[in-house]
Length: 483
Ligand code: GLN
Image (cartoon, rainbow, N blue to C red; front, top):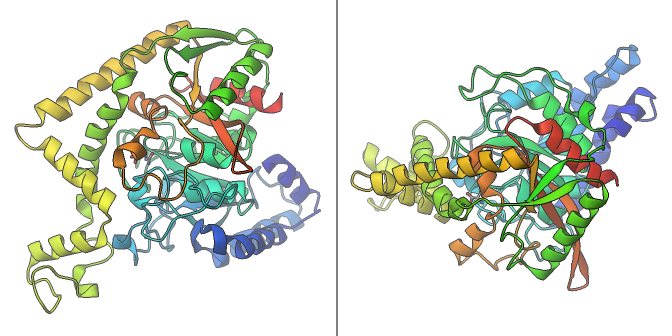
């Protein structure tokens, strides 16, 4: 899709301003129902598009993404643009700088249409935790789009953007991609700079592309992956163009299926998985069974370490440094006039009124697990299990090149279905969370559809690759897509 649009721009079949306006038209027609955007950046987009059109008019060469419109999840900062991360506490927050990935995209000439809805601070699997209302699944509007990057999945699936960025801490790019029928890539931890994404659980967070095709995901990854001195965990970059590795040739590739993973699955998802396996066999891949004995502890491990990191990272939202303060809305639990009387009351009132229930739950869980006396029993033990899971992956990758699993255990579920049952919601991430625990790259690719209430709901499958082996991962995903 990106390559075709690029060709149209250089052939002068369309201008970037026209293309950008087409997308704003689509947004004005569809987004009142779908509610995928929180903020539109029309002025910025048109200004960027004009600049590209002038370049083309002067006969200058343009880059692959130049002049092509996309969208950014609202927890990623764009200078002078509102960034709420789906939270009321940042309702009035205007980012003072560009995230590393935004600098890269701007340098490459990409057009930014706006910011997309997400679960508050990216905690959730359905966008229902956004303080700004739920985003709807374009395939069936009574159902969730997944989350937390639900808005980004929806804008791509419903042609309200060509590409989008999401963030993935436990599955937030891949699960909504699966629910909406798009491609979603979580790169290797360290591949893409985290500077300017609002830190949620820093040892898991990664930014990645959400697109219509694997090739588009590769193109976006080539642009946003770079070493960034603003992120101490960012890896060296060797200027790889991932799209150049998409040969579609995968004969002899060894793909691992995890023992036990296909049992107890939703019948529709199971069927899709069986057809995916069959197709890979036809393409000449070798399917092997592998074991990840400690992966069954992934969910509890994540839900100890993740809240610990959340409790630390979200301490900065205190009503003093950023965003809303209790005084602004005259909300106080302590004083009838609604005004906190000292610093501690300001902290307590601001956080009590401006943070949502799920975020508070994680902060409390994390604070508890880190408190003295419990640290060893919970946090430290979970870190040890994390190492065991990593060792399982190292061993598995001696035998196979990639690991194939479902992306999510179910297709998109009904709005409201899991909101009263946090554990059920957490279980949505059972297949995706392990990649964040161990840091490997993982992609969700549309695998097929299931029919529910007469509607076709997409189901994705997940491939996990070796650390920093995005080229193989993308190529094997691409082979499926083009066959
Ligand atoms: N659903 C998971 C959570 O709530 C993962 C979220 C994410 O990847 N940002 O923590």
